[in-house]
Amino acid sequence: MNEVINAILSRRSCKKYKPDMVPDELIDQIIEAGLYAASAMGWQSPIIVAVKDKDTRDMLSGLNAKYDPFKRKDPFYGAPVVLAVLVEKKFRTARYDGSLVLGNMMLAAHSLGIGSCWIHRAKEAFNDPAGKALLEKLGIQGDYEGIGHCVIGYPDVLPSSPLPRRPNRVYRI
Image (cartoon, rainbow, N blue to C red; front, side, top):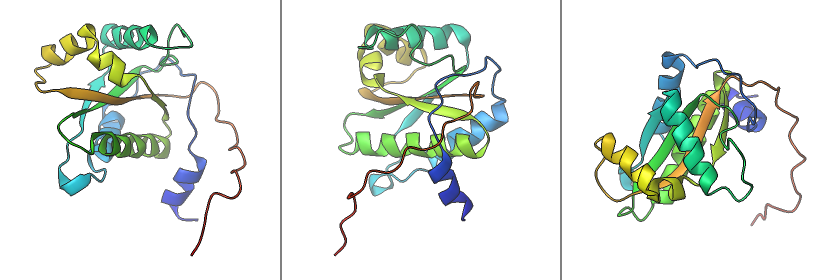
């Protein structure tokens, strides 16, 4: 089977990570895959905030937990790296373009033996004063909306087998 299709069929979300840091060269490859995601009109509108610093990672996790309806202590599941994807609201395709970046990064991580998971509530986290302060500290100006957090790290648990696909989801003409 084609290696890309195999990666698509075998990738699973990781919800338990080892504390070991992912090497910069692997993080950079994952980010680059995200930057090559398709985007409307070739605008390349999404940006990625890569967080390896433990204090900032923990602050983002706490901020995410503030809006988590399940009240998880660490909604990032212990992952040591967070790749937050944001897009300026002025782009009408912001959510779609950002979603493609997240998908590319999760597939790239899987292909490198790195676990990943898309964590929601980036919109709330970066709309919060603390999230806005982080963007300001980084010199990011504009009216940005958080699309999602891609957390990455070495899996502490092997991924489960995929669930069977629900039937009757394809209609052919």
